[in-house]
Image 1: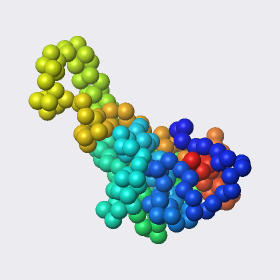
Image 2: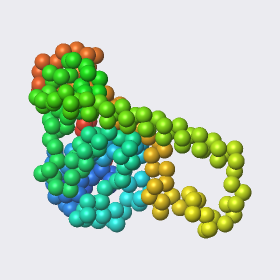
Image 3: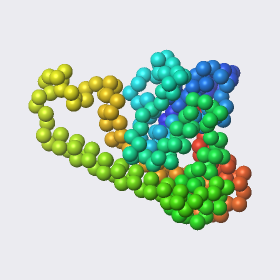
Length: 243
């Protein structure tokens, strides 16, 4: 996503120094605590948000001290998401990843297991069923599949509606825009409109699940080494430090 950068070779790595792009940095790290695996899981939660919406977290906000203080605050300031276009199970996992309490975040192994469950439930691919120790009832699997299918349907309709609406606006320009101060629907102040086209550029959570699944079982080959599986998922989740 164009966010990573290399630490200067001449710099001495300082465990208390903050490396990263502000919206992706865990609150405890912003509070000058050391990086941990849980901190990386927090960053993963923000990457999941980017994948689900097609927008960076806190898009439109300045990366400044005010944002850092909000992220560290007790009110758990996090990006808003249109829950209609993203499966609930995906949102639940994402929010667990960015929990303000690092102890409440899932491990990389648990994230891997849940993504395999999502993928198997959605595709019914037989090989993936045996790559997780999580047991899931058919009713739960059906519910996960239904969530992904419903979210995809709503997202397609939403994208079509947005595209059609934009075409209509281009074909019928508003001649009354001279007085924007009296137009409640004007989009001149995007930063102050929490609902301003937040999800026009939507991505696909299913693609995230597919990408992770392809890393776990590349080319649909049988994988028998659980350590290799865990390493593959870890490499996909945190391929390099965000910087």
